[in-house]
Amino acid sequence: MKIENKDGYTLFSTNENILQEALQAFFLNAEKYDTENIIFHISDNLNITPKDFLLFLDIASTKKENGTSFVIIIKSLDIDALPETINVVPTLQEAKDILEMENIERALGF
Image (cartoon, rainbow, N blue to C red; front, side, top):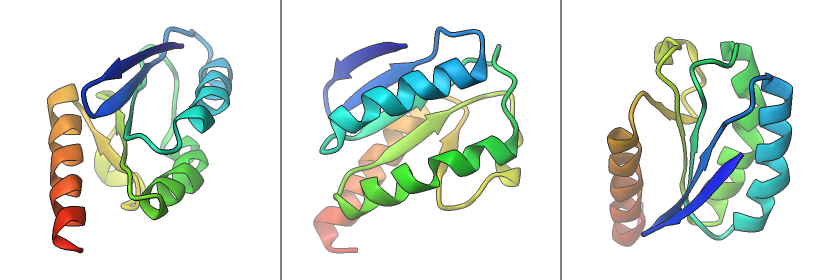
């Protein structure tokens, strides 16, 4: 797992080849960043299914309650097949855009 502190968010990137290893590394480290926005870039080399995204429901909910954002980047899945409560986008720029929009919403009291 590669972790980079960026301006306004922390970027987690998978470098593992096995899904369970990637998820374990992410959840182990994500708890340390509970007050920060998180972008999680999942490698297209991992075999992940829409059902696997249910594992992220708790962290997405917790981040929203804390007033922070959680966005997943993955290109290889049909985003329409994923839960709407999780922000999933195909590119880093779109993830940054989600963070910016959610920051504006919070500032406006939504």
